[in-house]
Structures are given as structure tokens and as C-alpha cells.
Image 1 (cartoon, rainbow, N blue to C red):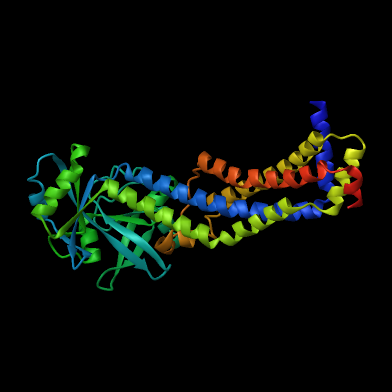
Image 2: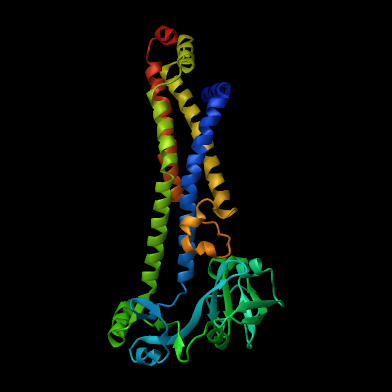
Length: 385
């Protein structure tokens, strides 16, 4: 153990003698790992958040289509849907998007006269009378309002409408409620200009989850102009979108990977004359080849682990404290129009292991291989070059 500690001490002193070169390597190495880890951290966090939200989502959502596009659905369609066996609660939903010209943000307006089980994090109360509203953290932040203040919005007829803020969602529900404004159903229909007897969509509770696809097929047969959407289809869509966006980001930042590969290749194809001379001296004073390889192993480990941990820490801070400012516009896509929300940290240890395996192992190997070639050469020949 003492022998290995002495070799590690010599490795550290050797790295300090070439501190500027090694520092440059660590900076490039850390930046490469930070980019890779940031993409994976952000994508995984968004997928976990979306998955947690969709756990309480309805098993089946029925939309009406017109010319291949989403259209308002007649409320009486619920009576046709109710004729199928194995169906529980059927709920027409009234919601839509609102562009706020004052803050250049998109808000989601949802109408509900009853408490929504999926929306639990609340300060204050839910709307109970006309003219009251419940808002998310993002809406409160960009409008600089809170409980007891007034929220002024422009309705579908271009007229200003004043709502009293009676409640606010807390930060732990950001990804679901950050941009949300909850009104009463009547207020929502009037504000968004819903025609009488029309809703945005209809949610269907399926008593037996194994019958979801079967019931969706029956509804499509009875109502050919509708599009049944299952919860599993929504989850698969989220996964596909996030995977595609993260893959696109990895492609964009492939230049950083190329830079790292060039760095590793340069290390593998040879070592500097100073390092060769050092190896020759160590061999001349009695060091074994195994001792030299262990020395270079520790040098590679110190540099690679320093860069690896620095890159991971930088990625964690970048994604979960600064909102992934470099990557968010691409990964979140159209949602960047929404007020910014804080991601809840989710780290996949398997992804961390893969990043480490694909970066630390090649670098350590590229450090040991050329050193082994110099270590098995006659010390006099090495020192003479």
C-alpha cells in the first residue's frame, strides 16, 4: 500500500510539472462530458416528469377531427360513448391556449368547476365563483401577481377581462402547472369563445386497463369523425419526441466528441520527448515496467476522473440550476414560449456509468499504451531519443 501511495504521489508531482498542458486537457475533456451529460440529464428529467404526470392521466381521450385537424367536440358525443360496456366516468373538458402579448408567453387556460385530483399542490383555494382564477408559478412570476391580486386577460372578442386570483400552484408542480390558469367552466367557455354544446375533448375512464384498445376501437366505429388517444400512446409519443430531440442535440455537438477523439488519438500515437526521457530515467534507476505502467495509469485516472466529475457537476448545475440555457430551446421545442420552469433533478446512474465508460476508459488506455512502448525499450535508447 505504501508503495502504491508513493507511485500516486509521484504521478501527482509529474502532472503538476506539466500543469498548463494538463489543465488544457482537463478543460476540453470536462466541456465534452458536460455537453453529453447535460443532454442526457435534461432529456431524462423531462421524460421522468412527463411519465409521473401521465400516471394520473385519463386512460382514454376522445378528440373530434375535421380535415385531419383537432376540432371542438359536441358534448352529446358523451351519450354515444356511454353506451359501451366497461366505461366509468365521462368528462367533457374545456381548455385552450392563450397568448399573452404583455409578456410574450403562452398560457394554458383550463375550465373546471370541481377540484382536479391531478392538481394537488395549491396555495389558497380553487375558483368557486365567476370571475375567480387559480394560476401557476410561471404566470405569477411573469405577471408579478399573487393571491389577492387581479389578472387582466384579453378574451376572444378582444375585450379585457378581470379575474381575481384566489389560489396559486406551488413550485413542486411546475412542469404541469407552471403556465396554467384555471377558471370556472362557464368563465372558460365565455373567455375562449366556445360555441354552446361544444368542448375541447372528452376524457373516458376505462374500468379494465386491458380493454382500453378494444373500447377505443368501438368508439371510433360509433363515431368515425373522432380520434381516440390512449394514455400509452401519449407516453410513447413523449418518449419518441424527447429521444429524437436529444439525438439531434448529440449530433449538433458531435464536434465536441470529435475534439475529444482527436485528443485521445494524439495521446495514443505517441508521448512527448520529455515524458520519454522521464520514463528512461525511471527505468535506469531501477523502476520495473509494471511500476511505470502503474504510474501512467494513475496519471490517466487523475486527469480523467477530475474531468469526469467536473463535467458531471457542471452539467448538473447547468441543467437543474440554470435551466439548461444552452439546450432548452431545442429539447423543449415550442414550449420555450412558456414561462421558464425549474426542473426537478433526476439522474440516471446507468447513463452516468455509460458516459464514464465511453470517456474515462479510452483516455486511460490512450495514456498507458504509448507509455508501455517506451517502458519496454532500452533506457539509453529512450533517453537518446
